[in-house]
Image (cartoon, rainbow, N blue to C red):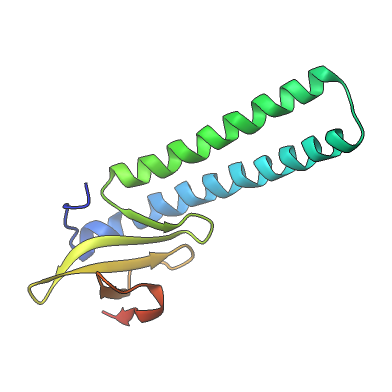
Length: 126
């Protein structure tokens, strides 16, 4: 859906939803890390087969949860640049040319943009 174009208002309306999505993704990521650390402990000091099976299933489930969350964001036409940072771009128009409105988790609204061939380090204020 990258051909979708967002107005600043449309993109800003999605910011609260994105904050919630990235909060959920971060929690799932933290849980996955904890599960993977426990699996590593079990590899060094074997525990029960049931625990290892349960943890493996949990890790796979959390991975799917993260992938589905990212896919849900992409389905909105938003470009995900960095999941852990919560960095996204919204395809848009500025002065008659295609640009990306740029947002990162923690910002209350979209205040920056950059050229489509540039990234976060080249953002400019709106």
